[in-house]
Image 1 (tube, rainbow, N blue to C red):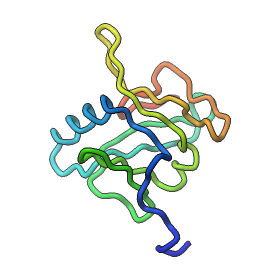
Image 2: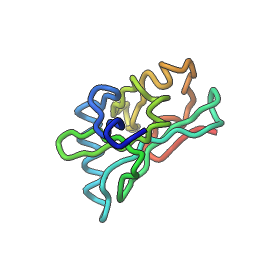
Image 3: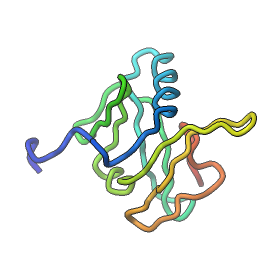
Image 4: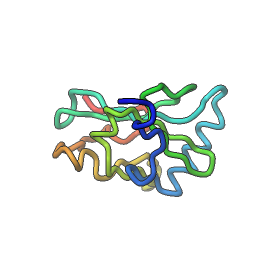
Length: 125
């Protein structure tokens, strides 16, 4: 695929709630040299696939980027094929607060459900 055909900018392929943007901005701004957050997918774990988030200092040439209010969320093309349609939210229930991934693997039929999924930097398996 040539550079001209590869869309580096995400629009509505993923959604991030205003509260999740606010919390992710606070996290990225507290870390030196962080360019944004990467959403990744890896094999194994709950329902065959697991996912998580990590800080990144530079996007790769294979990344597409979603931006809002200064927050950059990077997703590589392979992960995007599994995560298209995902909604990332930040929820507080009592003393617990976490990032919640909704509609995970909606386009591929996987479940993406287990206790540890959805925490920043976390995953399953």
